[in-house]
Amino acid sequence: MSLYKNNERGLTLLEIIVAVFILTIVLSISYKVFNGITSAVKKQQIITDAQVNINLINKYLNRDLENCKDVTKNSSGSGYEYNIETPDNTVKYEVSIDTKNNTGVYYVTRIQENTTNTEDALREEIISNQPLVQNNKEMKETPFKIEKQADKSIYTVSVYYNESAQEGQKSSDLNNKTYTFDVMSRIG
Image 1 (cartoon, helix red, strand yellow):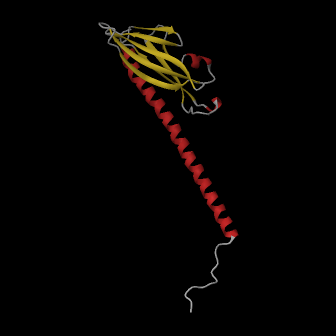
Image 2 (cartoon, rainbow, N blue to C red):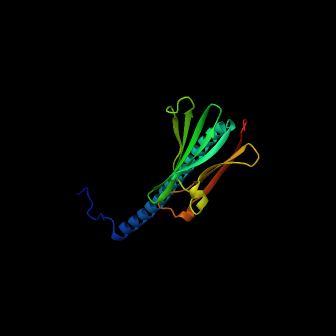
């Protein structure tokens, strides 16, 4: 007497095709979910970076403009700068506009110069590699602005940025944002 049965059957071709079909459906759904989560994380990282930049600008400009005597704008090459004169020193905000991978980006660097020794300048890059706002010529040329309101010692700061700029994204899909705040000078 034999312990093994000789009439055992394997899987049929139809059973294998059904199993592969079900596995393909499960894997494609898993890929779409994973891809959606990855895209959402990248978008949130861009939003977070923009918010950090805006908070830094708000922090520094509130302090600098509250104590300013005068603000002047100078153009230089592919960018421009704002000079904020305070009683103790001069603070510059350099805005440089660059092109990377056929996309316009801009940088804002804060330079604090000591009036006694101009070689000891403290440089801090506040905004780096921020994509320029698309479809608006003014925002593309001046993505960072400081303007004095007429007959007042109030300065309006405007920062333009793309909240969801990603590689390969159409310019019409970009979420253009403007962050604006006012600062009153205690001196001027």
